[in-house]
Length: 85
Image 1 (cartoon, rainbow, N blue to C red):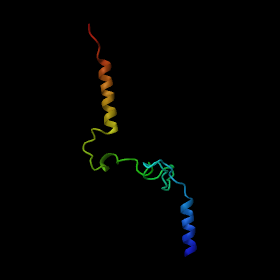
Image 2: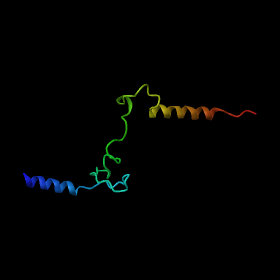
Image 3: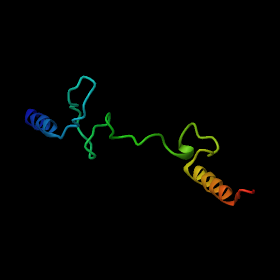
Image 4: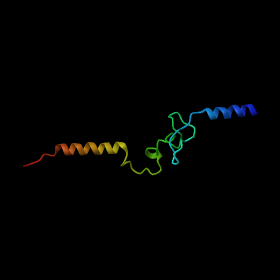
């Protein structure tokens, strides 16, 4: 049992570390994820879920698609306006 524990601890100590600069100026010693940073410094969460999975989702007015649609309509309207003398 002790040998398994010591091997496990040795393996944990050999894992790559995050290395991001902390507030104190030292390097972060948390284990790194596949992207090279730890869960605190940009590893795990990509942000809030999109759409109805987000608890604050209302009607979709600020979804990517709705914003792009409004931009397209705005550009079409601006393109049809002609300065009259």
